[in-house]
Length: 190
Image (cartoon, rainbow, N blue to C red; front, side, top):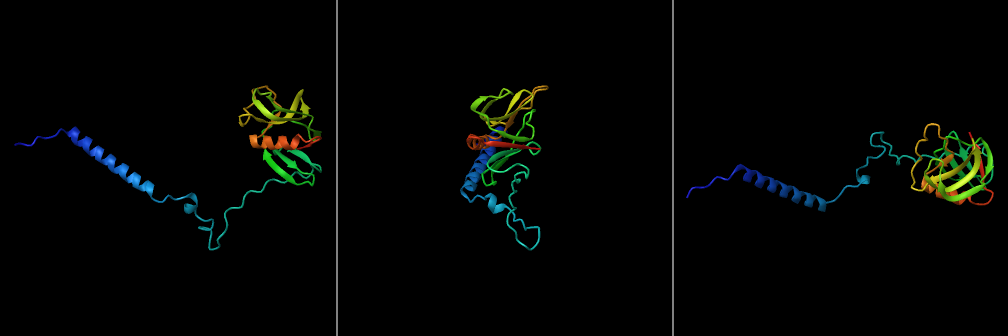
């Protein structure tokens, strides 16, 4: 009896199926083995620096409270650094974080939180929360707040004035807790 030759597409299909099965088998075997972690493959800081081992890089130190920002319990806002500090009664910073200022900012000086709103719509149309009003400028009320969805503020439209000083959601919640205490002062520095 004579052997029949199989068409080439049958051979290609068979070889492809066999190769796929081999790859799946090897992938399953590899998945059962040990997995490296970032700590296991991270080179030490001294790997190329010399013979002296060193610890991992030191964390960056938070900027100090501006020297000319008053005394006692207060919120400090640096216009130039775009940063806020909460300062306890002993003068120690309890928290500091960057902020996104609006197009209208407060003049340097000392203010008191005058009004609070748990939530509203900002002058840029964004839903905001943890609103702490403390100053005014160009006919607008200036306040600290954060977007409800946690986003950074969109760029102001050409000619549009905004007066919110926005922050990340967690920072907004912390500032709200600190700033809703009666007679909380806000010191604005350059």
